[in-house]
Structure formats: C-alpha cells, structure tokens
Image (cartoon, rainbow over all chains, first blue to last red; front, side):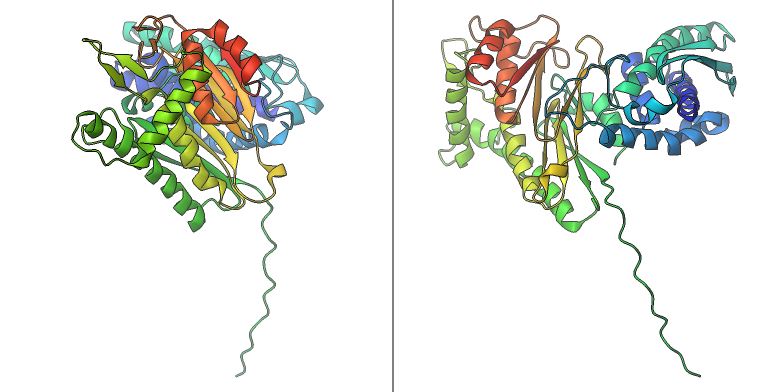
Length: 196
Length: 259
C-alpha cells in the first residue's frame, strides 16, 4: 500500500510538473517534454524549481521512489543475458516482483486532491496483483479556456505514463540516432539527469 | 593532565551497494552518456577511465568525421594529405568486411553525380568507436558500465568477479512516439544498436537503389559486439526479412527486434 501511495504521489507531482512546464513555455513538443519531465520526477530528481508553491507530492517522491527504482534494477532479474520482458503490466518481472508477492493488493484507489495553482488535481489508480494497471486523472482544473487546452493535452499523456514508468524503469535508451540538439528532449537525457 | 588517545574502532565496511554515476559529453555530433556502477564511482581511476572514453571518441571524430573538413578522412579525400591515422585504414577494412558479411545490405560507398564513388563510413564509425572506447572501462577493477551514444548502447563490466555484474535495462524507444519505450532488453555484457528514420529522417540509403529508406519503424540488433550490432541494425533497416534470415544462419549470437 505504501508503494501505491508513493506512485500516487509521484503521479500527482508529475502532473503538477507538467502543468507548470506547459504554462511557462506555451510551446514546444509536448510529448517529448512531458515524458522527459515525468521521468525525471519518477527517478527522484524532480525539477523543484517549477513546483515550489504546490509541492505536496514533491517532497515525498524523492526518497521513496529512488528506493523502488533500485530494487527494480538490481533485485530480481537474474535470468539470461538477453531476455526481453515487454513493458506491460502482465509479463514484466522487474519492479514489483520481489516485494509484490506478499501484499498483492488489488482494487481502485483514489488519491487526495492536490491543490495546484490551477485548481485541484486528483488521480485514481487501479491496482491488480500489486501493480498499477491504470491511472486516471479524475479531477482536473478547468479554470479557463487556456487551461482546458493545456490539460486535454497533458492528461492523456500522464494517464499511461504512470503505468509505463513502473514497468520500464530503464538505464539506457536505444533508438534511432539523435543529434546533439535532439538529446535535450530525449528520454536518455532524463535518465542521465537522475544520475549526474 | 594526561591525555590518552581513545581507541576508535574502525567503522564497519559499507555494504557492497553499487552507487551509480553518469557523465555526458557532446562528441561526434551526438550526446554520449557514460554510466558507471561501483561501490565508489567517484574513484579517481574511474574518473580517469571515463575521461579516456571521451578522449577516444574525440580522437575518432578528429580522424573520421565526415562533417569536419579538417578530419584525416576528408583531408585524404580532398588530396590535402597522405599521412593519416591508422584508423582510416582500419575502418576501410571493416567497411569492406561489413559489406561482404551483409551481402551488400550495408555499404559505406555511395556514388555521387558523375559516377564518382565516395567513401562514407558514418554508418559504422559510431558503433566501432564506442566499442573501442568501452575497452578503457573493461580494464578498471570492480565496475560495471554502460555507454549510450546517440541511440547505440554498450554495457559491460571491468576486471574482478564478473558473476556479480549487474543487469542493465535498455529501453527500446518506440519509433512512433518519441520518448516512449516499446520494449526492454536486459544485459550484463553486450550491445544494443538501433537504426530507423525516427530521429533524423531518412539517413540510411538502400545500397540496392541508392535511395533513402523512408518507411516508419526501427530495427534493433542485440548482440555481443556493438560494432557488429550497429552494422546489422543498419542492414536490417534496409531489409529486415533478409537480415533476420542471415543472422540466424551466420551470426546467431545477434538477435533482431523489428519495431
């Protein structure tokens, strides 16, 4: 249950980060930026500068999330050299394998509404066998037209972000060659930031 | 007054928990990330080895870049010099071998207008260079490392008990959605190379037609050596079906993932 709370909180803070970012720039490639930011948050280096005022989730996520990252990476995987677990909740053996067996809780949980400067944000997650299988933002601030535009873009990205980040806490990224400029927005850059 | 030294029992040795440290430098037109896991990744010998990794790559760039007019390769091609680094010959030989091994699906020579042939080894230099640079970390005791160079990854461990080398999780980027991971490969030692159009548009030419490969998707090859994983990934981008067949026949240690 603590893990669930952790995820809930990091999800919420990731959302907070997303909102802060989009509003401050109002442009740019939303999907790449959003992923980078959310990933950095999940690895414990959250961009504290941007969330200063509304950081209910931020303080928690730093310490606890780092812990779960470590256990996922070093803990369970002693299979052969080139196994390829697909990062879907059903098959992956990485992040929750070791400690998930005891608790394996299931159900739908709703987190506390977090007050952001745009209004309250609330996340509901569905857990099956100790893993998050779905996360839905149930309450989003729709203060004005501009926010609605921002949120309708950011929220769907976040919804599967929580699911994805749990199973795929990864060390390196292989993909088509990126340039020096493209690195800034890359997933690799977010991972590096967490370890520099 | 008598003072006596109070005996201090030495602190218990820290548990063998591997800490992790990352370095990033921009070299060869991309960002190269080096991650090291060790009990104490701040060790000076680790720092020195990482510095040699980047120095190796900078030298490769100075010798073999096709973007720098002052590289040995371009000065040789422009008849400005005949004295070049031995790596120019090494890479030329490797390019010939790669072409032969892939039945011409990998080709470092392309024809320019007027029928002139130009040697452009860009498609294999990065994998070859990073594989060579990693050797600087192979000799460091008690470390594990991974190097990511613009989408190509090599992981390994230094000297010492290798049975405990940690697993690295390499995410394969979703070619349709940048920043997303479509699959994960776990490795203790080995390499992952990916070719595709996602990040730079169609930059791989099909040697059979001379035209860029423009379809969506990506091809990834996982295997022991980054140099060959890189070559095979590029060849597979040109013709995935044929390369899948060739790999199982000729290089079964390498595995192809098509996304």
